Length: 247
Image 1 (cartoon, one colour):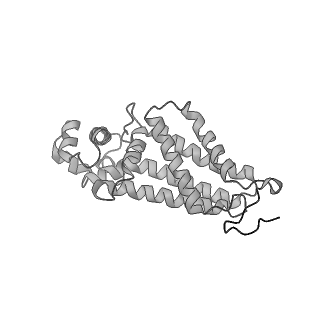
Image 2: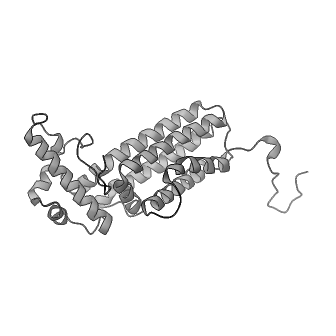
Image 3: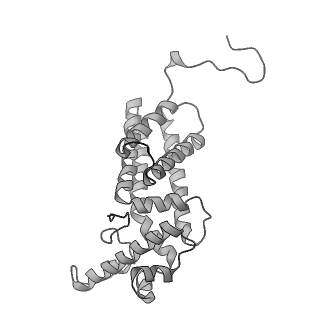
C-alpha cells in the first residue's frame, strides 16, 4: 500500500529475503518492529530518490533520513539496488500480470469491441498501480531512460519488459486482422511512450483533467488510430515512385 506522500508501506508486498519476511512469531513484537524499520527505510529512500535521483543518494543518506543505524540497512537489503528492486516489485508484478492477461484476451478477441475490452483491462491495471504506488511509478518514469547501471538496473530492466510486452500485445492484436498494418514494434512502443507521458503529467499535476478518465480516453484514442477502418472507408494509397496512380 502507498502512504499519503506516495511511498510504500511494508506488509504483504515485502520481498522474500527482506527482514520483514524473516522467521518470527506472526503478529509478535519483533515482527512488528522489523516491518516498521523496513517501512522507514523504504519511505526515506523513495523520498530521497524522487528528490535527488538514484545516483546521488547513498546508503548513509537513506539511513540518516530514516533515523536508523547503517547496520540496520544491511539486515534488510544487500545494497541500494536491492532496495530499489523491493520498491519496484508490487508495481512490476501488477503491471506485467495485467499485460499478460491483455495479450491472452487479444488472442481470443474476434471483434473490435473485444479488443477494446482487453486494452481497457490493462489500462485499469495501470491506473490501479498509479493510485496505489504513485511515488514508485514516478521513480520508474524518472529513471527508466537512464543507463542500466547500479541501482538503476532494475528500473531499466522493467522498462524493457514493459516495451517487450507492449510489442507482443500488439502482435497478438494483429492476429485477427483488426489493426492497421503498422509494424507492432512501432505502434506498440508509441503507445508505451504516450502512456508514460500521461502518467508523468498526472504525477506532476499538469492540467489534463480528471485522471480517472484517462484510461478509457487513452484506450479510445489509441485504438481509434490503430484499428483497421471498414473496407469502404479505407483511403487509396498513392505510389511513392512517381508511377501511375491506382485507378
